[in-house]
Image (cartoon, rainbow, N blue to C red; front, side, top):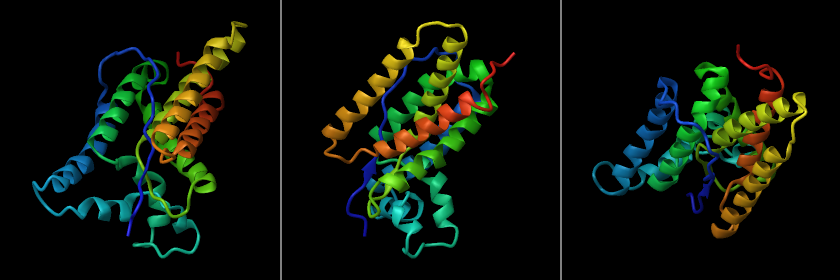
Length: 221
């Protein structure tokens, strides 16, 4: 039985609104579908109030499955590195994360295109989960898209860092945003009595930064 849920809500970084790309809509819809179904079950519109618990049991990230826990299906220890990102702790959690996605996506698409945004989003999910597995609790499940969202933020800030270093411009604007993100995580962790999956945020951010400053360092022509 699940007795505690770990919420990985994130903050926002400012971004230009260039319209909603089909790739971003696809991510939102893929996240919205399970949340709408589970919200309807929670409120008694259909199904059972146990549906959310069952969804978490099968789709959330569980550190114990990397130890000696028995999975519900054979590929669960691998699938959970991605499936956790499409489940949320409720409508508010979902809404905050999708607003953040809409804020971060336009400048990233403008720089590297929609395909790489989707790839950056997808690869940041296991990056966030991996650090949660290493530093997070074994018995608490983790859900939410914030590992991927922090990956997008890490990618964007990684590009800014590289561009500023190449142009010999001051790095303090990037350092200021990094400090704000760290402070936001600390405040949320305190406000949520330790139920914030900061480990997922850290892992997603590092994965996004690494990809942006490595294989995707050059600006799209």
